[in-house]
Image (cartoon, rainbow, N blue to C red; front, side, top):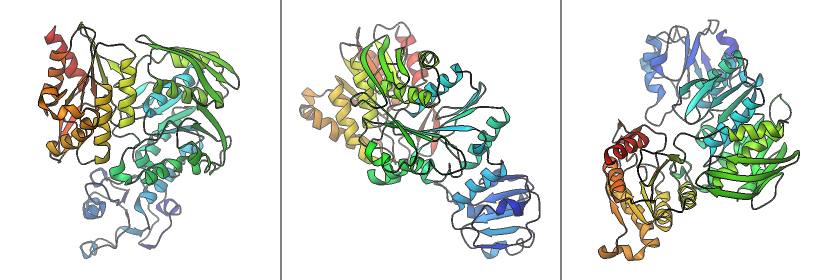
Length: 502
C-alpha cells in the first residue's frame, strides 16, 4: 500500500516529507523494523518509542509516526524519512494496522468477550459451539491464538493492534467465518481494538481488578463499557450485546447499548436462564431456558461461575441461530480449560487443583467450587502480585481464610516489590476472618515465600480426602522476581512433587 493512502486514515497535525513510497510493514517495536516499514512511536510501560527513532531509521523505516516533536538528533535524517505528528500514537497504530491489512474485521463476524473473570473459559465454549455448528473459527484468548487448529501461545490477553489485525487478516485468508476474541480492559483503554468492528459483545462479570492501572472501579467499569457503547458503530448489521443480568454492572452497561440485548442469569430470569443445577465432583447438570427452547447440559466443568460462563456461550449460540443440539454438543465437548480448576493427579489420596484465580471474586468462586467436593479440609496456597493492584490483597486474604481450613501464603510474581510487604497486606485480611490467628498458638496459616516449598509443604500437610488448592498462576509458566522471568509452572511442579510424595 502507498504511504499517502495509508496516512489518509489518520488525523495528522503535521507532516514532513514525500509520502509516495510503498509501505512494506508497520511496527511499534524498533527491533522489528525492516526496509519500507512505518515505525509508530508509542509510550510503553517500560520505554518510550520516541527514544528509538534513530534505530528505526537505521533499520530502513520510511516513515515515523509520533506524538512528540522530533529532536535535533534527527535533523540529518529527516530529508529521507517522512515525519508525521499525530495527537495519539496508539490510536494511529490501530488505524494504520487496520488499513494496512485491508480492514479484516469488516470481512469476518467477530465476537468480543470482556469481563473480570471467565473470559477464557467462555471463549473456548463459544469456539466449541460454533465449530459443532460447522463454522470455521479463529480464537484469540489469554492462552492461545488459534486458526483452523493451528495454535500459538498468546503473549497477552488481547494483542497489540498490529498483531491483532494481522491475526484477523490471517483468519480471513483462512476463510474463517468467526473470530472469537478476549478483550481486556487494558486493550480497550489502550486502543488495541480501535477500528475492529465487533458483531457480538459479551460481558461475563465485573469485580475489582487492575485498579493499579484504572485507579478506581468507576474507571474500570467505564473501560469495559467501551466495547458495548461502540458496538453500533460501523458498516455491519445484526449487532448484539450479551449481558449478565445477575451482575451489578448490568444496568450501567445496558444504558449505553444501542443494539439488541440478550440477557442471561441464574438468580434473575433473563432471555437465557438456568435452573435445577446439580454440582458434584464429576461436574454439573442443569437445564437452560432459551427463546428457542430448552437445552439440557451435562458438563465436566464445575462451579456456579462456570454455569454463568456456559450461559454466556449459549447466549451467543442463540444469537446466531444455532440449533439447540449443536449448542449442547459444543458445551459438553469442552472437558477442561488449562489452568482453570485443573485437577492434578499422580495417585495421591487427596485432591489437588491448580487455578488462575487472582482476584477476590475468582478466589471465592474457586474455593466455593472446591467445597462442593466435600473435602475433609481445604489447604490453600496463594499469594498476590507485586507492583500491581494492592487494594485486592486484603480482600483476597479474607476470602482465602473464610473459605479455607489452612493457608500457606507465598510469592506470586512479586516483581520489584518487597514480598514481606505483600504478605503484610494479605495478613490484614486473614486476621479479619481469623482474629485468633494473631495468637501463635491458634495460627492457621504460615508464610513460605518460596512457591516451590510452599506447594511441597501443602502436600505434606494434606491427608486423605483433603483438597489442596494452588491459586493465582494457573496456566502461567513463569515467576517474575525483580525484572527476571523465571520458569515456573504450578501444574508441572505439583505433578513432580506428587510423584515424589507417592
